[in-house]
Structures are given as C-alpha cells and as structure tokens.
Amino acid sequence: MTTAAVIDPDLEPVGQLSDRLKAILVDIRDEYLQPHSTPWILGFSGGKDSTLLAQLVCEMLLSLPPRKRLRAVHIVANDTLVESPVIVHHLDMVLERMRQSVGPLRLPIVVAKTVPHVEQTFWVNLIGRGYPSPSRVFRWCTDRMKIAPTTTYIKTQVDESGQAVLLLGVRSAESTQRRRSVSRYDNGQRLNPHNSLQNCLVYKPIVDLSTDEVWQTLLQSSPPWGGTHRELVTMYRNAGGGECPLVTDRSEAPSCGTASSRFGCWTCTVVEKDKSAESFIEAGYGDLEPLLEFRDWLKAIREDGSKRMAKRRNGTLNFVGEGRLIPGPFTLTARREIFSRLIAVQSEVNMELVSPAEIDAIRRIWAEDTIAMTKF
Image 1 (tube, rainbow, N blue to C red):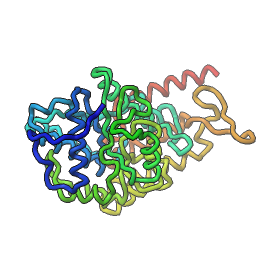
Image 2: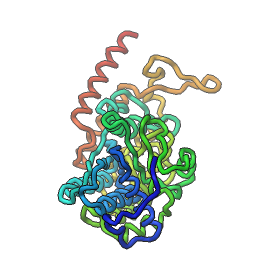
Image 3: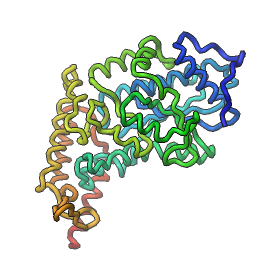
Image 4: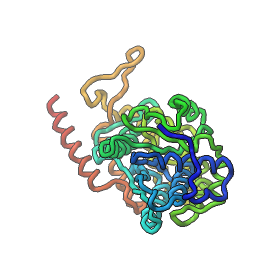
C-alpha cells in the first residue's frame, strides 16, 4: 500500500518544470521510495511518451542520493525484427546511450531489448509455416512478436522478486481506444493489477498529460543519457504519425496496425497503406522504397486464392457464412516465391532482413511440411 508523498530534505528539487510535471515527478519519487524492493520495468518504444517517462524516471533517480537508489529499474524495449529500419536505428542508438550513461551516473538501471523466439518471428511464420500476411481478422503477429517476448521478460522478474511494477507511458489523450483501455483497468489507485500478468502491477505516471505537454517538455529539455531529442522530433516529422507502442496484453493490440500513420513494422499488412513509410520515402529515405513495394505485394497476394492451400495447417477446412471457404496457409510454391523475393530485396537494400537462424528454421519447416503432404 502506497502512502502520501512527503518532502524529504535529503532530496534534490525537481527542477524547472510545470506544476503538473513537478507533481508527476514527486509522485514517481514517492512510489520509488516505498519500503520494498519490487523492481520497476519501464516499457520503452523509443517514441515520445515512453521517452518522456524514461527521462522523468532518470531525473527522479538523479534527484536521490546514491544510497537511496536501491530498487532496480529495467528499461525494456521490444524489437519485432521487422521494425522500420529508421525506427530500429533510433531505438538502438538511444538504448546504447542509456547503457553507456547508467554506470557513470550511478543509476540502478538495466537496459534490455526483447526479440521474438526464432520459431515465432514474422518470416518463420509467414514463409516457413505459410501464415497469410496479417490482417485485421487474423493478426497473428502481435502475440508472437510483441507480447510474448516482453511477457517472458516480465515473468522472469516476477519469478525472481515475487512481484514487479510495470511503468507504461500510456496517455488517455492518445486516442479514444487508449482512453477506454485506461479507464477499463483503472481502480482509482496509483498501481493497478495487470490485466493478464499475475503479480504484476501497472503504473501510468503520465496518463493525464496532453500531447502538447509531452512535446513541450521534450523540446525544452535534454535526456539525462546524453544527446538531444532532435532526432526524435525529426523522426516524427518525417513519419507524419506516431509509434506502435510496447504492448503487454491483447487489450492494447489495436495499437498495432491502426488506420493512423503510426510507424512500426515495415511488413505490417494490417493497415491499408503504410503512410509512415511513404512519408519517410518522401523525406529522403529512398532505401525504404523496395521494402514498401515488397510489403504492398505481400498484402496483395494474401487475397490470391491460387497461392493459398485449401486446408489449414491442422488439416481442417474452414467455412464461414453460407459455406464460403476461408483458404489456409500459403502453398509451398508461394512460400518459396516470397522467400526468393525477400532475398532479392535484402540484396538490393544491403541490410539483413532475414537472419541465417530464421532461414534454417524456414527450411526445416518446409522439409517437415513436404513429408507431411506425402502422407495424404
């Protein structure tokens, strides 16, 4: 049970911030100083909201004398391995700056990045198992690539400590969907039980901030880990949208692949058009054009019945409505075609799009499927 915030004369002042930001920083500090050692896990996407939250937490820690910085803070990002190259470059740059700074600043911070298991990556599922390109009806990617890796990390901390506090930079003003999600799981307390993770409490310090307040704070300050926020501002300006945030349960899954021009996976076929990629290309990122063309082709062939098997992977037929057959996975021929085109694009853009480990898994699954087909 948390107690009311108190002013400790041993602490540094919170600095030149608005009254609302000062109150948030005091609240964060008060929660951190509660008499227990439950670790914090801060979900970090590299976008504006999680960046502000990470900055506030770092500033709070710096306001404490080192002897009071006792609780571990894990700053955890997720990389689906098919993130936009522009985004993953920015994310990796910021994470590395954080890693390099926590030691000299004497901060009890662990910086980590989760990735999907090789058996659950985008390419192993799509090219290996033949899963159709994700759609609003069959969005198989979010659980496997975003939720599962981060959930595993959180559960590990819970197993080691008995409990964990998950800090999220979600804000009610983000969208109507976000506002509903926030209110649905808000019990009126500072910490709320996680929707699906046992012994995990959720803390949303900046939930009431407006978008203008977030940008104003970032533009008027520098991150404690070094550098500036100029790269972040430029990235948003070039993308013309917002980031796909770190997702830890299915109630937040709609934040992936929304109709808005969010930036996230370059392979995302849930949206009709990848407006952020188009904006990046217009801003001068010509290397993204082959990726966008490949993504558009992936979306188109999903509707080509000649490239899909009749039966699902479990051997059943799926009928809906008045007997309409929903096709199953891509055929082996289609999977090989997708793979060949992907390798060609990889050579064209001169960056790794599919790893050797994924290629090994894909070929193993192809061999297993070929053997299985000969039995029917």
